[in-house]
Image 1 (spheres, one colour):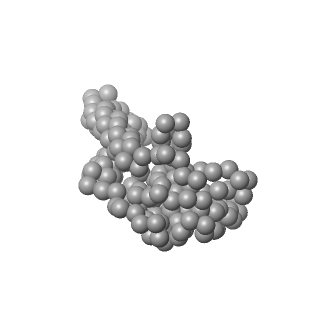
Image 2: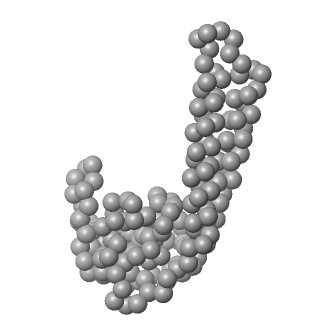
Image 3: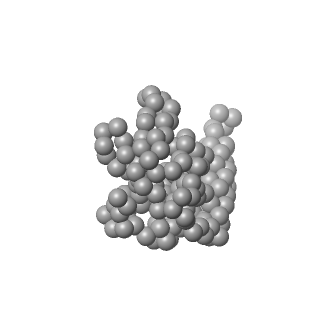
Length: 164
């Protein structure tokens, strides 16, 4: 039975979370970039790699900032679609899965932000993207379907309890 979870609230919280992550990454990248060009990072002898390492760190963070900027932009224009009762699972859906142990896990299928865990009024919602193995298995499925995914620890069978 579906819990009363507002998908608009889930999307709002995901947008906030990614925006905060972008802010932190941008600050870290700015600091790393400043450190890479700082006078103390100057190479003192041929085997001194401080400036090279600082440059690598700065470039890596710049790439993460760019990726996060793209994710924030995508979520900024993403709108939750209207869902019909017979529609297959797709982006913007909340999906409850029952594990082999009978435990229920709730997932939000989003275009970006996979792996984020959101607390929505005491309920944990895990964000999935269609690129994730579980997200890919869910797309196109319906309530009552069983999905099997191959994980490093072996196969896992889950039943789709409900979708909204």
